[in-house]
Image (cartoon, rainbow, N blue to C red; front, side, top):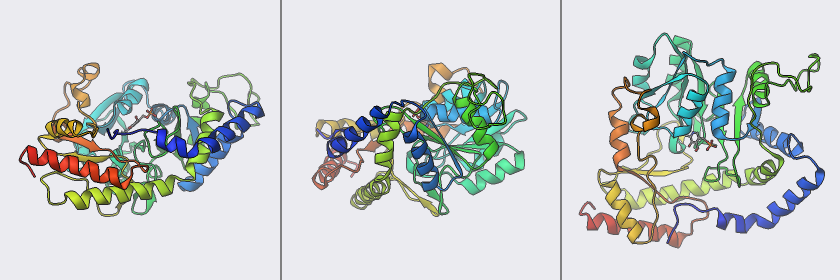
Length: 378
Ligand SMILES: Cc1ncc(COP(=O)(O)O)c(C=O)c1O
């Protein structure tokens, strides 16, 4: 069986390096806010050309801390894409705000032409989600944010290293939010997240909110580094063990993205004559292929056939947010989400990770072609 995703092969390759680095870290006696975390924040901000980085406990927390830092509160509305992952919505709700969904275009990303009609007097922010590894149309979104004076918080959980007009995802808005959940472009062996910003004030605020509201960066403040909350905050830390792992893995992230792009190229070349809707790297964008997403109205049946042939695929995501019980009420009035609804019914992803062997890639393609022939759609 070819698994949709597994970390064990990658761990096998790196385990001695990682275990000895963790051992060194543990011997130092610092479990939080130590040199590994600082090193990771510095390297991450340098790599993705942003002035400041704030690590935190998860991608969901990165979004929540960012929203709180730009002042999002109860009564505010935050716009995002209808096909996003649940955490984008849970972060908006945790900040006390109301999420507003906008339908997607043919590229599975927020439809820039539909954003303005979702803006009301209460709209304070937009979260463009760079889903599957490709960025949204940031020029247009920036124009809208300037026109209506609404802030941008980018959800880059699936798009670390992706570029728009040669600029990295996560550097366009007030904040860029990343996830190090194990399946991600840069995954740790646990949870982790990162926030990028170029604004010093926002950086300092996000740092306080991450740590119960405690000031740690201002020696002039008599409560600096004292157990004293300057403002309400949460607890969201990236610990030294996860930071150690991420410092090692960050070194190979570019090589891994190259591999992902090569595998995607192979898939696309081999399937270009099929009836499937394949991913498409758009103008001015560099796709990192966190996911290789295919759409076909018979997607669910194709997935079943492929499983029988020994290949796990995954539907990401099978249910639109507005159809979920938790959010029925929030989205009762949200209309015109037809494309995200249609795509969710037939979307599926092929396995794609840097450790896949050529023989496995061929096996996956053969299983897919077999399934299409069986369904008479090849
Ligand atoms: C688009 C998107 N946003 C946010 C998140 C949340 O990240 P995490 O799982 O690290 O909280 C994820 C990952 O699951 C994601 O895919």
